[in-house]
Image (cartoon, rainbow, N blue to C red; front, top):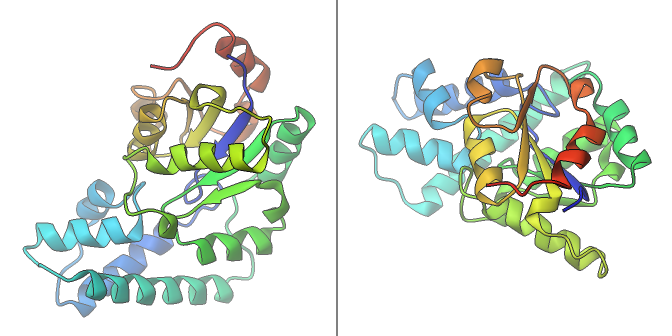
Length: 236
């Protein structure tokens, strides 16, 4: 096997916005006459789509809601998220993103993004950050009926990359995923990929239990070393 593609998570890897999402989910819960709990958000929402997050919390609180009602909650949260970003003077993009994307390009690797965030949220951030053109494929939360830790998003990214380049013949074992949560790492591993866990959201030692490599910063990812390992092994 060889390394052909790098697949990024979005929230917690490209943009440091988990605190914004937690605040907005809390506002939705308050509007539903429910008291937000910090531990609940971390357990049920981190690494998952907004839809899965809200569904998980409401279910745990004994609330049964229709798909249409859940869609309305997600839409309200998305509008509030866009409004929050519009109020910021500077987007909280993690340091070194563009430098790392440039490095990947020099090594002639494909770049994709797999996230539970809605496409318009992702597009807004990538355009504002000036990095949209780097990504050959984006799999967003509105492309799927499932959420991480299910592997569907990563598998769809492989399919779309193969569709975009007929001679690529990409398989999951030739991809490296970059994730910041246990749910995201599990999704990529279930898809058959190697994974770097970046300690933006969880402590390094927690991610070490699941990821193939763990780093504090993107600049610490040694792509040459990853290539070397992939020529020798296949992810479990």
